[in-house]
Length: 464
Image (cartoon, helix red, strand yellow):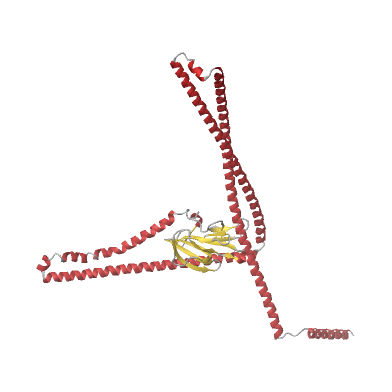
């Protein structure tokens, strides 16, 4: 009986297994292809989502850079406004002290003048001017009284003029104090407005920082992309500069060879002329001795051989002096060159290693500075030079490189070009409009570099 039950249970298990296999749909080539399409679609959606997350992180990083630059600008503006208000307060105190002293002098002058008028009126009531003169005991006394009355009248006129002048000065000073106080009130309003703007900026910055801290992989990818763009730009600039140096060296060697060949040719011509002259002397010594016309021509022909050997260093010395003069001209304007953009701007990324104090993972090594401007702004040359190269690099649109002797300035992020390779440009001349990124709220940024050949320099030391 027990064995029968075991056999029965085994048969039922086998039957159930067959039913399960029969219920499962059979996989064929069509179903496998369908599964692959579904998997590929899911993979593409995932890839797009990752790219969208990275793009959003990049926008947040750019916004953080803009907000940080705005905060720096606001802090500088607030410090400047506070200094101006402090200076205005000092001016107001000085003007108040001056007005108080002038009021005191004016009161004393008025009292003195009033006292004199009272005294004069009292005398005139007692005796008229003519009676006072004619009542003198002598002509001398009469003259003295006449002179006294004249001087008294002049004194009164002078005091009247002084009173009017001093009163006008006091009124002018009071008006000046009023205007200075109005200026102070306006500066104080500007300070309050800028403080409120800074508070709002810091609040938005804190929100962005909090969001960025949660975006680990997207943040790293966005930073890696930004650093790659900078490296690609550096590599292309280094390649172009190295190519220019190679061409310059080839041109120098070619010029040196040309000068050497020219010197050699002249030396050979001088040698042949000397041999011809020697043969002519041997054939007709008497004719050569009596003919003065050949001697100068011999000297003129023979002399260039010696200077020909010295011409090469003289040529390079002159070229070197020209390069030094041009370089010196650029160097002499260090710190005084115009900014590469006109109007309002903010430096959103400084030279060297940049990191945010609250997001320590945000670090980018910058070979120049990044300048954010309102849309529609243009890039301009900071110094006279020549357009050495125009090229494109991913993330920077058009790049314009100007040569100023041994120095170079680089303008990356140009949209509509106004110059081409080989053009001579003047300081302040427009190179093109700055690109506004439609995928980043039309953010408009110019990347600017200063180099001495391949050596990178801090642009903020060169422009004002």
